[in-house]
Image (cartoon, rainbow, N blue to C red; front, side):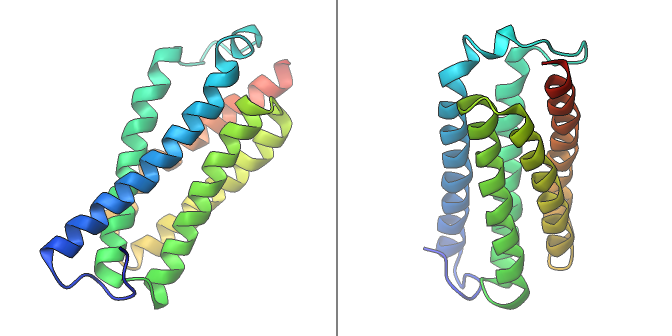
Length: 166
């Protein structure tokens, strides 16, 4: 579905958008599945800092962020394709998606809070690097990643606090 060159038609562009949404929401679904295995019994037993958001906030925030990620990736693909700067930027995008998924597996699936902390630091750096690469191609795409960068920064602080408290 994704071509090496930017899409030539509106139909190809819309199919590309659908592809980015499916990939990003697919990562979201897998992360949610990894989370669901222990969020009901393990996570509530952890000591958490006072600034921990209510459990019901995480789902809507993450779905919004995954949609923003999909839009950002699509905009870069649409402008630059998969070669040159576009290929580099979208490779970074894929790396941050993978690190995002790994965090859920480490933290919730395997209950390794310390390893999850190391991963989330790498994730934050990968998002920042991706945003810089996106900025060079499409500034709005980079801006779409800023809420994600901020949330992952907050999540890293939260992950660190939970690691220290437990």
